[in-house]
Length: 300
Image 1 (cartoon, helix red, strand yellow):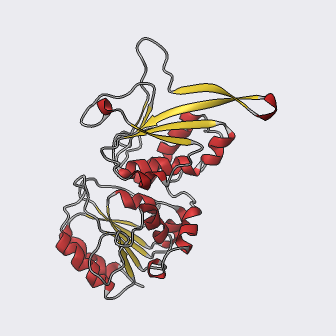
Image 2: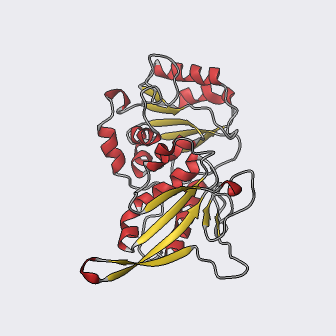
Image 3: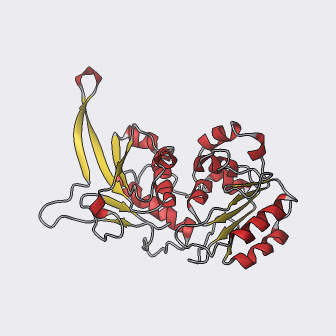
């Protein structure tokens, strides 16, 4: 998951990443609408963290009469329903990124703000994950002109809709001891060994109430087998006691205030980047041979 906010200008004329038009209101009054254009070239996790924030500030955007066009790469986002769940269609319009701008192309569209985490913001490295995201979201607010509204910019946003989803879940997904996000990463984030991963899931399920995101066997509840979506995984996490997760898209749905308060330890499987999380009890697992070490750190 990587992000960057860039500001590019046309060489021949002033940039128009923000456009305005006038909407006629009831009673004959006109109200100016500001339209902002954002884009991201990469993965589910990138988009979810962007769109979640825009979704959470929808009321502010509506009050200020702001509309957003958000461009994504359909090469990566094959199941659009996953990200549409984080979209208020009255505020945000999802649009496919033009083919000439999609990876591996290094060309960038003009008159749009790129939302991609990778480069420092005010000297803060993206490796300082939760600290960085506060700066990242503040940057978005500055672009939108909302920087003076005291909006929460924590990555652990208060997402009440997750509690509504949670109440509708099957009981096997409620109050789980351990949520295991065990899907294979698509960007080489972790040296994935399915045999060792399955062995860990089976071992822990013999002692605790466990749910996984990828099928292990017929006895352990699996979100994919039951047709649940990533947002449902976020809802399950709000009452979990531990999270064991490959550093892939679904973990971003767990970044909310309820999960932060509920989870004792986040075990994140990633050997690509050394992340720092200052607001949660975060432990990084760097290889499959270390999975057995997790057992002794769980106490319920």
